[in-house]
Amino acid sequence: MKKHKPLILVTNDDGISAPGIKALVEVMKTLGDVIVVAPDKPQSGMGHAITINSTLRINKVNIYGVKQEYSCTGTPVDCVKIAVNKILNRKPDLCVSGINHGSNMSINVIYSGTMSAAVEGAIEGIPSIGFSLCDFSIDADFSSSKKIVKTIAEKVLKNKMPKDVCLNVNIPNLKYEHLKGIKVCRQARANWIEELDERMDPSGKPYFWLTGKFENYDKGKDDTDVWALDNGYVSVVPTQFDMTAHTTIKEITKWKL
Amino acid sequence: MKKHKPLILVTNDDGISAPGIKALVEVMKTLGDVIVVAPDKPQSGMGHAITINSTLRINKVNIYGVKQEYSCTGTPVDCVKIAVNKILNRKPDLCVSGINHGSNMSINVIYSGTMSAAVEGAIEGIPSIGFSLCDFSIDADFSSSKKIVKTIAEKVLKNKMPKDVCLNVNIPNLKYEHLKGIKVCRQARANWIEELDERMDPSGKPYFWLTGKFENYDKGKDDTDVWALDNGYVSVVPTQFDMTAHTTIKEITKWKL
Image 1 (cartoon, rainbow over the protein chains, first blue to last red):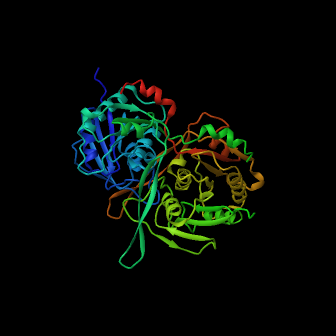
Image 2 (spheres, helix red, strand yellow):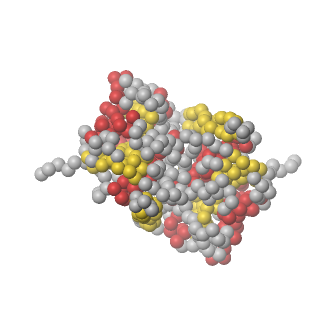
Image 3 (tube, rainbow over the protein chains, first blue to last red):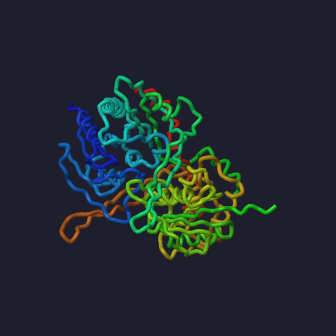
């Protein structure tokens, strides 16, 4: 019997022409049939945004020589929705997003377009992984990331995924031989300390750039993603979309609302 | 000793001129000093998006006659960030978002700009609540919602909030006397079954509207928000931003990545 070839959906948030998605597609081509549906422009920080107040378009492209590839005018989450519901005839076996140029560890998971695409994949019932390299530069070296991506994607194709969960994978910016290993861990409790960089436009009116400093408040030691990355490990955080704070239901019920 | 008057930050995702935020401001004026920082245009479905690839502006307005009020060019999450880090001198005692025109029950929490603003409040360490009325219309009747908002906001001001948690409050579209009560519950496991409504532009090129049907897969009975709302209760879901699927860490560790 012919072995079923996995169908793999690839997306990202840096846009379809970013080097990170090129690296991801190259790995996925070795694992199955690849469909790319990715934003036509950078969509960093778009979180789980969807396009409901305006329209969406998709355009066929031929960048990576895969089965089907489209750029999409929408957000990363729109890309997953339009791929699953309009472009594909069957549910993919795997949805991968990235490789993001820059870390999505800790609280960044919630702002990240890369991870939101993976979370949307999980909502749609697809084993999904978001990959990020801890290097923001356009010239980032994805060679060690590609090996990690392959290892983890193969494991997910083999083991499937726990129900309603996807993986948030962050890769330190190190040579492969310097990586300490892969660590399954939890999202650290950290924050951005915002600094709104105020500037004046030519007519003397103020405007702001949102910027800030990442601050880790987490007292946990070796069980967080921040610790793993700081210590040379690839971090893998199983990530869910049930946002209920289950342990507090009892306490709040006592308020007698 | 003079009693400390609460400082209350109000935002929303339907935009600063929406009837829902007017209703919310009216209630908050009875509870403390109110600051409004809200989007200058509708931002529904923006999820936890932040503006990092372009700039932000704020404009002083005088719509509601409160202590300070600004419209902001950004997303609901941007509004919270800019309020806390640029406009306010001290951390507010309460951050409220809404009242949204339309439900944010179940999976909608993740797409919702209203709830993302409340989640951002929690990330910033502010007791925060997102309010939504299960009626999308612009002429929605907020009179019973206002009573519920007051009850819940007073309880939060009194009890504070469990750490790293905010509340997702959805209110059925019923007269106050027909409401069955307020139920603390969990986010139901439900989904949108997307239908991409394909149309042709005047030059014959296709475009899409993202639309769909809400489908509740949850086998739970009276412990979910969908059940509560269907049965005439106000739903209150304690909502967290730790997205780690803690219970699966052990299982995924066994994969030996």
